[in-house]
Image 1: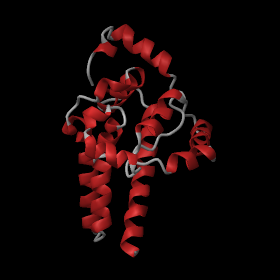
Image 2: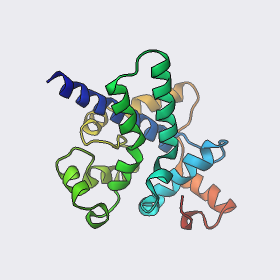
Image 3: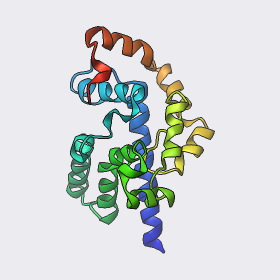
Image 4: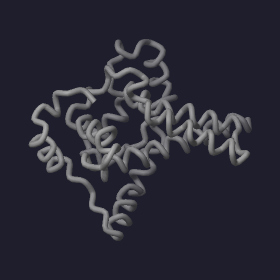
Length: 195
């Protein structure tokens, strides 16, 4: 029973981390930021105007940066003498967060029976749950691994609280329409290119 509890807690912690990263890149990323702008912000911006633009990406193309980040986290845990099964599980889940996100944008035929069954069992985020992120102006449902945390975090206005704190220290939330207009002036074919 203890191991099951550890697995569930690890899964939810990684889901929260996925939400924090997703929220930050949706709200504060800038296309002009060196490296991150081109590799994360621009594809993210495109995704919110064309949600299926990334579904044909390979696992590696979707997960490259997450894989690197999780590898670094595992190395740090090892150097600190904290590497254990839950750290490895967390890294495996984190490295696949974009894949789970991608599954929520694909059709059942594209995902196959196994993924559809896992989504129906709510072991990973369901498409109907993630769709709320796209219909609510991308201001909710940031966690991408499960259906569990988003209702709680959205109900207690967790994301709005973080935005309020960042506004206090001078960070302004991104306006996607204005950002898209700026990018389209520089790259007219921006929405038609794959990430």
